[in-house]
Length: 278
Ligand code: C2E
Ligand code: CA
Ligand code: CA
Ligand code: CA
Image (cartoon, rainbow, N blue to C red; front, top):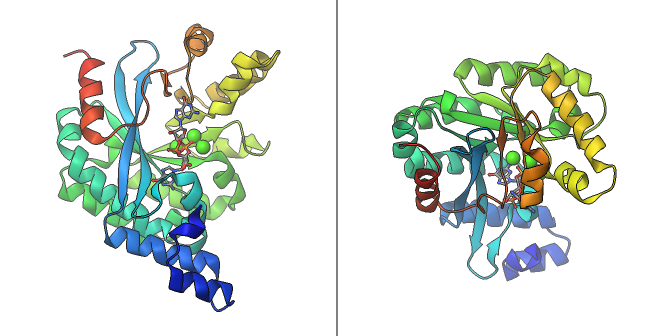
């Protein structure tokens, strides 16, 4: 699919071996930032106990002039390999501050989360610029959670990761482990970092509800997750049967299509209005 996103002239250079494909796509991503082709959708986060909306996760999408809407799974990996992920996330924070700043200031009890990877932490400037952008819009970093995948955390050497996470903490950001339960098995290492949220991957909910014996796998992961002492969020709640399965379990918050698909800023704010006490 992304091949079609590459302009013809660049594509010819790729075919002639004069230029690498990821280079061509990275060129496209830079252009997309300049031309405002990205936009954000917000996936609501619900408190498990009260059923109220307590925030959202910001998810990026690419409105390509010829390809239509491209989902992040297709371009994030290339953006990460080429380093374009950092300017892309800078754009996302800027845009989030513009369209959600007022809402965040009006709802200090709520928070928004966004996805980062070790590439962001390798860039010293990234965190500092993020804080500056938020401050310019009167947003406190403690209303922003940075999600980093379990896999990404375990791939990196403890020392550099710990330093980067510490710095993020000092700036006031909250940190979340994303896709928990899908990484490697030396989870003990994660205990060393201070996380404020653990997000159990949606594949575990599907296993729990759809596969025989899957509930035991889910409960094993949930026990480990709760062992960190941080609140646990379960992703990918799609059906009433998922809600029923989770009802009696020790979980802080939920996300998934059962509550809402990812939506634009205005629709999210309306959704929050309907799902929170005045
Ligand atoms: P993720 O961080 O695990 O995000 C959750 C994904 O699950 C989102 O897909 C969301 O739309 C989808 N989802 C939520 N609830 C349900 C559900 O009930 N059922 C199903 N089937 N899916 C559900 P999306 O938006 O396509 O994002 C995919 C991945 O792309 C994300 O996984 C994240 O790793 C990455 N991503 C998205 N936006 C960004 C971004 O701004 N920066 C970075 N670095 N990565 C991003
Ligand atoms: Ca995420
Ligand atoms: Ca996830
Ligand atoms: Ca994921």
